[in-house]
Amino acid sequence: MGPMIRAASLRGFVALVQQLGGDPDDLLRQFAIPRDVLLVDDGLISLTDRDRMLDAAAEILDCPDFGLRLADHQDLGVLGALAVAIEASATGADAVGCASRYMFVHSSALRVELRPDPQGAPDVVALTYTKDLSRSPYSAQAMELALGVFHRIVLALIAGDPVRSVELAHAPLSAPRRYEQFFGGPVRFGTAVGALRVERDWLDAQFTGANTTVRRLAMEHLQRQPREPGGPVAAQVRAVLEGRMGSAPPRIADVARLMACAPRTVQRRLGQEGTTFERLMDDVRRGIAYRLVTGTDIPIGQIAAMAGFAEQSALTRAMRRWYGVGPRVLRRTGAGAQG
Image (cartoon, rainbow, N blue to C red):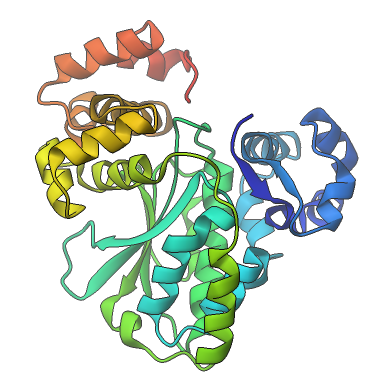
């Protein structure tokens, strides 16, 4: 069984499909998602089936901004108990730390974290949203839904708009002005990871809903929630690799130093989780390369560098190993399957 996600992540789906003249029950049946489950926010559905359904709905209903429209139907509440802890946090830094630590309650394959600004601005940080692509394929509509919801959450937590711009790891699905209208600022496409670029001062901004007692109780509840077996060290390693692949690919010693442990410890724990550093590196490269080759017009040589390859020929060899064709054929035909 693949990774699951709480049914609340489809809040507003039925109403939106009906508004667009579609049949939500037909879509739900096609992707084996019981409609009754949607009535219970904490019900669980397949993350992969949900994401494929979002992509299919956009195509069937001829609605390229489906994910953004669905985001307008959702808010912080879709995160359930995690939402309570976030809203009761004292600052942006506390809220992101909580989301990063307990996102597994919403779905174990999703991760939210703070990273340095990808454009190098010292007064900006990146609030990133990523999916473990070794467990579930990339979905452009799901990414736009998630970043749309997180944008709404950021705006709801403090006065003003600290979001400088948005980064999306795929080519635009709608006209660029649609994104600028939704997010209220510039959007950059074909990036290494999906993110909201927010002003660093937001991390210290005081939330109006801060409540230490409520937050403590919510955190205690979250700590008691079961985690899917395996994977916490692999998830940390993957996050480091995704955030630093655009420059020289990190060595295991570099990753171990960031995780404050020895390289042998990292390798041993990865082995206990059924994977290796080399396998994770390959998976991360594959995910970045696939998105950029099939979803953007970025030159192949530049993609090779962004995916951590020293030469374009190395990317070509890797693509043939992964998909049986080189990057130019993959871009032209859409051959292969991600995940």
